Image (cartoon, rainbow over all chains, first blue to last red):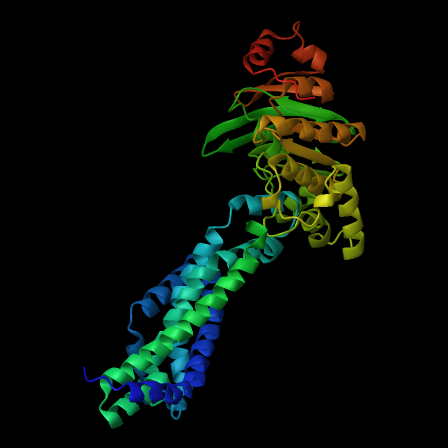
Length: 222
Length: 250
């Protein structure tokens, strides 16, 4: 076996330098996805059919298109049609592309989380003459939040991995750095194994943190 | 003058008549018990008083608020609901809130009290139902009987004109029924006006000032417990009373 252990071990310090960029892209995209996903969820519950349809089409559109196509559409396509987008930083384009895509998935997660709250909770609030938006804010939302956490966490894990697509827009994050290292050394196996393990460790750390948060937040229900 | 007056009240759900031309009144400080076979419309009647179910016609007056069943809107709904609260068979405590937060919720979210005052009121009603020591627990850690007593505390915290109780002991294990019934009896002694749906006939006899027997969505008999529930009462009611199990949890 021709595995270069020395090179393999020394690749990690190089990759670690780019973890902040990977995390920055993932966190900003997730924040955008949460805001947009929340809005789309509210639109889904609208009594107006047109608004409801808009939400459904939004979800279908962004779920139905590969993330890479969306990134290219925003970064290379938009400036051609709308000159105002010329010079759009690649980081912003990545955050918008990944954020919009994941917001479609998250809106479905949020919708399921709200729907899974016992309807009796709303009725109890109504019987106590509490206004609908207060029932939603103080009773439904906190319970839906707990319900949404595991699936929303999975979305973040997916997003963390999808940030590797940012290299196509010229951003140097963990995967892009790995690609350059592999190109220089021709040690593809060692380099990409190190890249894969770096993502894996990040996701293990995140999953561990999320389990802790879930344990604390589940106290009222256990 | 009666605290509750229900006139010509009907409820239709999917074109099916659930309640037909219901008329009755409840005096202030008195307890009315709704009895009758399953599907007779007892729970629907109770829910309609709280407008969780919209009537198709008729009028409901509770305290100073009167609504016309054909002209229900947000304002009239909130206005009538401000007069009553409901205790459900399945408790329906807010799962994300501790016991004391559940009791404080109607006071704070309806802006009836500031936090300190709401906390004092909640602690006081929780002590009335014997659960002040459980105030920081969450509903999931309480027994069914304890949850129902918290639900009663939540219902009386805002001092509504009337408390509506829908089969408050039906979902409880037999050994837990007594404590809930005793809590409700204590409320009756304080002259809190209540309308109760129950299958506990001994309890109905003991607590009720008025018994209303419903069948097929109509009031078939109404009167004092002696008039309706005694062996000399109407034969249909006697048959029903004999058919339900006779437990005495008190």
